Length: 482
Image 1 (tube, rainbow, N blue to C red):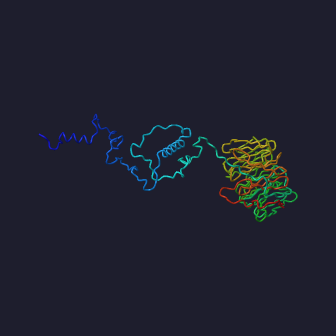
Image 2: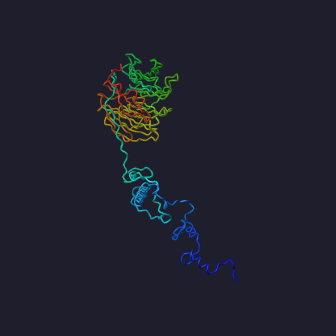
Image 3: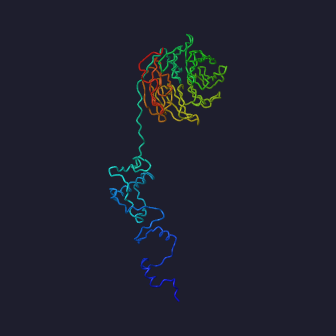
């Protein structure tokens, strides 16, 4: 008995002829085959009525009417060339230039999945096509494409070879062991001439006589406090005087040394003084006592003293060829460096790197040495060829200046750490024994036994500053400081 719900054999045969491909060996339905069928992969017999896509909406532009917008469809050759160039540059940027010539593995051609996607409705005109180098996705330069890596070439900074101002400084002593010039944070230069101290205001060029020690004494060192309001004066009689510069009044006189005081260094309210009697005295100007501690270690005159920028370490140099480092509370040196073979007067702490100390030796040594006081290590040595009298670091760039005596009397600007010379300045006819730097870090002043002070523009201004120094080249000419 026939079931009315079942189709007849004839109708089933005709239906299979319309909807099924030619007879083939039946295969079981696997998950992979099910996914391929859902995605319409390798389906060569598409329905004539519509195109089947996946669950994402991927538009097909095969039916786009480009003539409606008066836009020419790009040719396949142009698109293929751009795509190939981009692929090459992307591979070079990600995997290095050596991979640019490697042929990538073949990838499935997606053109079989949908109509050709090369007809972009928005495209650049041919005259505005970018170069191959502009296709780099991460902004690389030509080095990535060519495989040749060039280090950036910096144009050497031009340092003026002549001083922009010269001051006559009568009676400026030609003594290697003295420190007679210092520049305050208020832009006032202090100079010891004979038994007197003179102040030169760099903004107004006004000269003021601060003090006269009398015929039985002489000025051996000067040093500004960090605020720039008080000046310490070391005398030949072993005393240290504190002066209020704004009122030209002596505030205090402190004793303790038996011989001349040739080196001074401030650390906030603490003043360190070094003497020919081989000792260093620590003085707290707030205390009633003349000094609070005495540092012993040098076997000859102390001629160099410098506090680090964080006020934690004091470096001292002496005529015993020794460089010592002290902390705030020690009475014996915590670090001792004995590599120099002549007196160590030139001492400078780097403002850029904590613990980096530079020192220079005298005539028999001629070397600038660099030390890391944090690791207690000797970093490098540079033979300058002449006596090293002073050192100072730039506050704005990683450079330093050295002044020299026998036999060339020159001033050298160095780039650290390569120690390449940026400039060699000449003009002094005697040893360049004195050096100070302006508060803006651009100008240095040098003094020599030829009784002149010369002002040089050697360092660039800070990046945050667009204006020149207050004492710029407008003050040309030669004048006298007293």
